[in-house]
Length: 156
Ligand code: 4NP
Image 1 (spheres, rainbow, N blue to C red):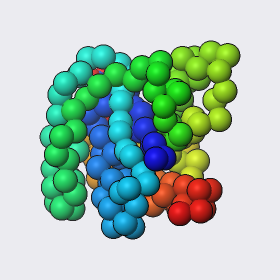
Image 2 (image 1 turned 135 degrees about the horizontal axis):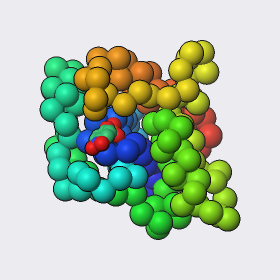
Image 3 (image 1 turned 30 degrees about the horizontal axis):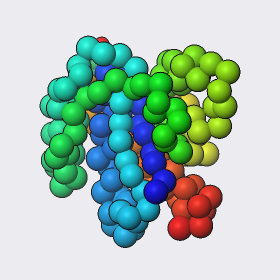
Image 4 (image 1 turned 45 degrees about the vertical axis):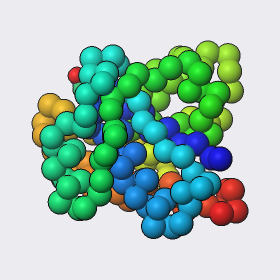
């Protein structure tokens, strides 16, 4: 099983959106048996909460299910159990590198790394500005490219 973990700050806006979109792409590609998807936040404020309504609404409009998605905090063992740990922005990336300490950080990347022609390095946080549309567009492309990357790398 190949395990993919999306990480943002609160685990209610961007990373659950990526989890839902990526899972739906994995299903469409018929790769459910090979790929497992999860998300987590570096912060602990929203543990146990469902996705933010901005995320839920936009996914509902796209007919992408969010069933069972609940916020959790990223933990040390995630660094060992996930093959791809995909941060949304430089802040999350820094936190993950800090958690990794002396361990290898080869599994840690940023979603926009996979969108080679993007002018953005970070998926911006929509929690304060409510810009879920722009975030959706970026996460959608990022997930598409990430899946292609994993398929190539793992010969799926
Ligand atoms: P997310 O957005 O990291 O995309 O889930 C945020 C959610 C909550 C907070 C910040 C960002 N917060 O400060 O509570």
